[in-house]
Image (cartoon, rainbow, N blue to C red):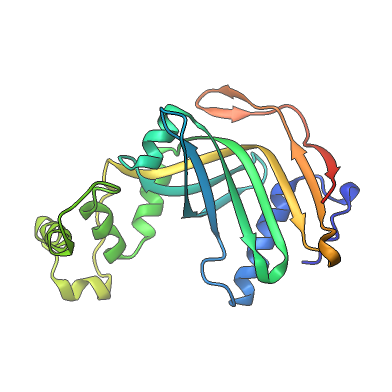
Length: 222
């Protein structure tokens, strides 16, 4: 998709994000084209950033979804301060999308469906890892993995065959990030880049964010 960042042509920036991810994915030249950074804030006001994978883009409502361990540092920080920010960047294509939004846990059935779609090995890993917590060595970590295999009566040769599915751990699931600010950045010659900022107001109602306004947009200088 060739976008020249004409303000009049872009009514919903979520469409641009989805189309750029599809373009990079279809090209098959970049691993994890749906990867983005997410920055959160802890109770001391210190920011932390890490990479996660975007698993869904809802264009109409304006949110993206990623999955994680609910006992992880990032989850604890999102529970404390739901507002977060992130960046998608595809250097080979000259594309970048920055955003700010509010994260809330995905509906349980949505997290169940996604967990069930994962490979058996990934499901076992989710059960076995107490994400972000310290462990003495790799051997101890492997013991936790083996303990999950025993718990669910899984033989190691079943992992590659993917012939069994596990229930979702209660401590694992998705987050929806409801975006209220998104900037589209397109590389140009002489570092004279195109930037358009989109903003909208959100209010929280019935366990989700809603807006009654269209995206407001303005062009930014490089």
